[in-house]
Structure formats: C-alpha cells, structure tokens
Image (cartoon, rainbow, N blue to C red; front, side, top):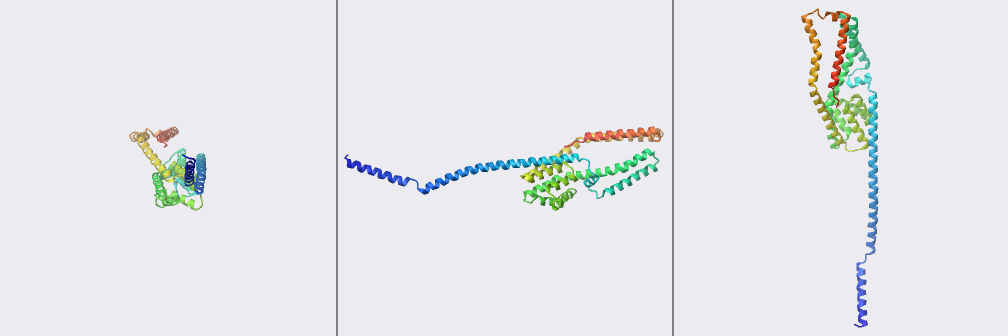
Length: 331
C-alpha cells in the first residue's frame, strides 16, 4: 500500500469521525435544558428540606398549643375544686328553679314556722320543737334544691351522648359547630336543650366558646360536660378532626353509663339490706307500741328517754350515710 492510499484512508476516517461528532454532540439547547434540570433538582431538594423543616416546626407548634391548652384546662379544674362551696344563686341555677334568693329565704322561713306549729300542736318538748324548726328552715328547703338538682343532672346525662352524636353528624355533613349547637338547643329534650340554648346565647352576645362552655359547666358540674369542654377548647386552639374526637367522647360516655348501670345492679342487694335494717327499729317500735302501749312511754315523756331517742337517731343516720357512701362508686 503506497503513501497516497494511506493518506486517502486517513482522510476518510477523519471525515467520518467529524461527521459522527457533529451528529452526536449535544447542542446548546440540550446543554441549557440539562443545566435547568440540575438547577431545578437542586431547588427541589432544598424545597423538600425546607418543607420538612416547616412540617416539623408546625408539629412542634401544635404540640406546644396542645400542652398549653391542657395546662389551662387543668388550672381551671383546680380552681373549680377550690371553689367547691357554691353560692345559693349557683345552686338555684343548677336546679333551674325560677326563684330569687329572697324568695328562697322567705320560703324557708315559712316552712320553719310550719314545722314549729306542728311541734306545738302535738305538744312536743321545747328541744324537739327547736330541732323541728331547724329541720324545717334549713334542712327541708336545701334538701329539695339538692334533690331537684340531682334529678335534673340525671336527665341531662341520659341525653347528653345523643346530643354529641348530633354534633358529630352535623360536622361530618359540613355544618359549622355553632349551627349544630343551635340544632340541639331547638330540638333536644329538656334539660339538654336549655343548657345548649344558654350556650348559644352566650356565644351570640360575644362570649368566646371557652367562656360559654365554662358557664355551662358551672351550671351543670358534671364530668361529661367537662370532657366536652376540653375536646372543643383543644380542637379550637390546636385543630384536628373534631368529628372523630367527639365520636370517641360519645363512645366513652356510653361506656360510663353502662358501667354505672352495672354498679347499680351489683349494689341492689346491699341497698335492699340497708332499707330493711333501717326500717327494723321503726317496725319493732310500732309492734311494741301496739302490744304494750305503756312500755315505751318513758322514751317520750322523760328527758333521759328523749336523749336516748336523739342519740339513736343520730347513730342511725350516721350508719345510713356510711352505707350510702360505701355503695356509691364513681366512674
């Protein structure tokens, strides 16, 4: 192969290599696109890091708000425990009695006079008459208010879980919480509708939800209302799924109601025994009075007998109160 042939072959190879370089080499547009993609990927990584940091910060902030809300609720619960002795106005509001404090005192005085008149008419001793006046002026009216309050609270407990279910269904369907509260105030049975009406009226006149709920708890001091207040206040401050939280609360309240029913069923025998034991002294006294009328006369006509009756009544009352406390189980 001569020198001229080698030169022609070399030029052909160089020409082919140059053509391949021109066809396969990336253009300026491709280089720009590559640079932009690398820049975007870098920005995306930094954005992901920034987004992760933001999510962590928001989660920490939410946890901080949650702890702060729980601390505020616990502080208010401690204040309520310290303020355990409530005024007469508070007790009348809890019983929903439409009377003023002045009317209550006048009624107590009238009942006291009625009891004293009964003692005078029956010819009782001055000590017995004084005790009857004390019972009529202080015991009977306060017992009536306490009895009416407990009966009202029991009715509220029976319907409160159903009211929470109404809020859950309303929130799931897209209604705001205030509208759900108004529905309960208009359609729920008493006394649930009365309390929720006062709650919505408090919000309407400018009170915050927490303040309105606190007033509701003051009028109806139940653990169920306290749980309801905690859920709504924390959800308002920290956010979250309100429907799920209230649904869980409704389930817990129904389980508490079932537990109370089981406790009442288990303590029914003890209550029956207490009633029989408490009625035995009166039954025996009546039987002895019928069979031998003069046998128990010294208990009623002598000072020593009166003190014996008074001591027996005090001890019997103490025993009844102790047995009642033993049968009460708080859940």
